[in-house]
Length: 282
Image 1: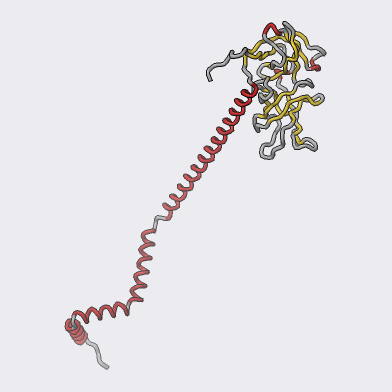
Image 2: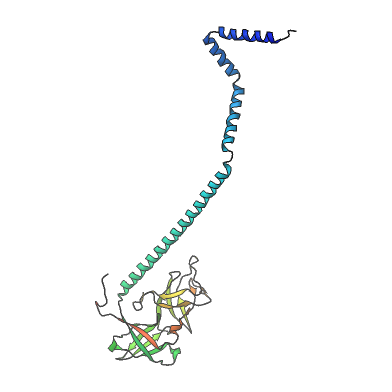
């Protein structure tokens, strides 16, 4: 067996160096390419491991920061979604308000109603007591009062002038069989007719709508479609026990009048304005 001493190793190294120097440059390049191809699996694996290690080292410590950035983006998205929902709701309110305004203007044009100055009148008698739903007031034709004029108690609709003399007028109030007011529910914008039903005052002909349910204490106002009362005058509130009418697609509901309409001593009569009077610039 040949023993490799330090001298022999040195001599072999010098011989290998001389051999490499003796090889032509072109052949040396081919030898290097062949060696690189031979060792490619090993060197490729080492490079892949090195690249993965460098990526892990570069991302080391960024995890919490990325999580914070993601949480911040989620918070901003939630805020934007909330703002968008508010804007959509505000747009819907504006559209409803515009529709109500158009409806009121159309009703006024159809009725050709023009408000004059409210005329104060004292209640001087109640024929057949209050249960008769009639009043006599101390204003008549001499003051511009005529049959059909609407009568208010405070801000609430009270009734209609039935007939009048020179200085007095007879008023039929809500609850009288001959008085029926077209009405509207403020909360749901549904329309119906307030009229007497026995001893109760009811809002009839309001169609049941599961998307817009009518509830107790909803506000009832005039719709203005009768040509007597202007739209928006308070009538009362929906009473308890709202339910479906038997065999009909309508609600069965009562109307509770405000305290001001319970037994007034002073009322306001809305006399019609003279042709062309009270018309300001549009």
